[in-house]
Length: 190
Image (cartoon, rainbow, N blue to C red; front, side, top):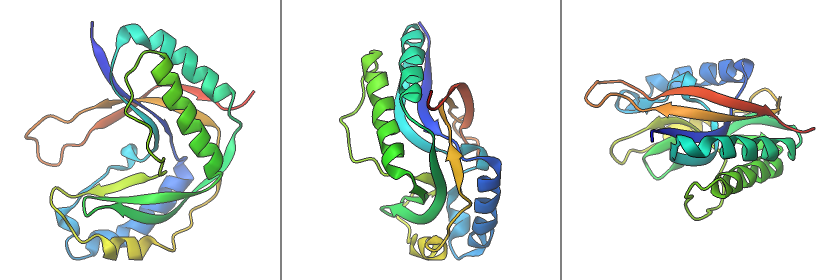
């Protein structure tokens, strides 16, 4: 049986992505920026639950459970806000607004996957983040986080839970990035 590499996410709308792209443009000129692997705009998302390789036989149950999780969660306000880093390896933009609801939705998406039979990692504290760039080596990302710390994006209503397929890049192709494809999406709330 074949499998798909999947994750559940909330995707920012075009106006929010446009605004973030504008704020990021000057960062590409900072010293060391060329050594970072910048996430393509199509890869910007707030991951709720990383599911890994999922057997296709589990998909019907997963769809039903994610639909239920979305149905039980009301739409909520969200905006891209500030920045942070994981060690010296990943630069990310944060979130502001209905973070309690975002965390609730993340917990529900993880529980839905687990109940559908997908082995999930132990639950860690959920840090909402949208990955902007990665480094293969330890890098000083503080100039980038400092440049974005005051960023407050346009407010939008998060109204959809998306299940996204990650198609990994071909090894050895410079600059190649994963391709993301929304498999299914469910509106939040009743």
